[in-house]
Length: 466
Ligand code: FAD
Ligand code: MLT
Ligand code: ZN
Image (cartoon, rainbow, N blue to C red; front, top):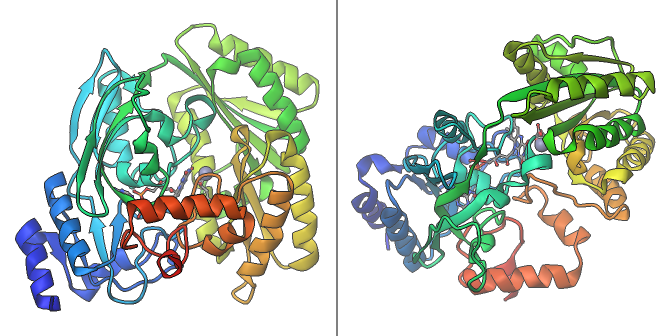
């Protein structure tokens, strides 16, 4: 098929406005959020409904054209960025953004893949419910991307990763088949739970077009606390005390280094309301029971008395809550303004966090003395963003290997929540066992035998090997 015929056929499916071919208009699809990956899409296609997604995929499959699903483009592993061959078609779900229904009794929401997370959160809140997936990119990230990456964020401690919210899914498979499992059942053990094959697989097995999400009751009271803590060990003691004192109400337990908040103060114009400290903890709890505030105050008194925390502040208003959260949620933006960074989105067993930080710190200082460590993250989930601000000449791959070897030695993961995309393909191959990789290749081959769904992401050159 000539390029003109192919583009015309796409237009016949999605309408003229649904196909983007101009180089300047394609820029937003060709570069990732961090501007570290640059590709060259053949075009971008924006279907309006699931049938159009199916028709586009069928056309691409029959023409042997590789496809790259695209959500809000906030992914941090380059999963939504095409390669530079000029052959790949970006399929953006942005025009499929409807919230199809909210069930206030069953506490579910059926939503299309292109809906922005924050829009879905707001719709749930209007119905008096909580969509408990929360991350700093929620104003741009879309449900398809959130599920495609199995995003984590700041509420995982209480509500789990994105996949745990998914009751039902509708997907378009690599050959264009629509598979609809938009059931809103809390219990469904009828055969394979196939929806899991499409969640967290970064568009390499098919395209998510809609989902049924499990919502949660909205708590009436929220308490947010910022603590200065002397060390990661002390932070874990605070976490233990919090789990014991207010455990079931704890939404978030975030650890931030002094360096992280220095960056935020420097670049975001925000002010940390506590004296400078090596480490900080941001903790949020919520409950509908009125005694929550008192329980948190007791907790704060206890950890200050034991000197596990050296200072602390409890937000007195919603505004103060937002101000404390802004410190945490601005770290990524501030880091990107500071200069080049090499990111590590790692997890280790929670008790191993202090040892990991100590060992990685010593290794980095020895091998890359110029690198500045910006460590922060979802400590309550064992997830540390071990990011390093470096110069342009730093060998990022060597730095990755150094940090990831320490992670693996602690039984950790080299991608806690951001996925593999194209950023960590080699490191996945290095750090996962052969049988695990072979299982993944079997699944890829079974669901995408032609290797056209987001090729080169998660698994390299799979097709060539088969
Ligand atoms: P995109 O970036 O567009 O795509 C991401 C991946 O999903 C790609 O591989 C793409 O091909 C695939 N994909 C997109 N749509 C579909 C679909 N419909 N079907 C199948 N596959 C699809 N992540 C966390 O987990 N926790 C955090 O706390 C967090 N904080 C962040 C903070 C900032 C400031 C930023 C910029 C990012 C953060 N992220 C975080 C990264 C996170 O992965 C993304 O924000 C989000 O999950 C991606 O959604 P998106 O719609 O932007 O997807
Ligand atoms: C966050 O939690 O803010 C992001 O996932 C972290 C990052 O930028 O590495
Ligand atoms: Zn994160």
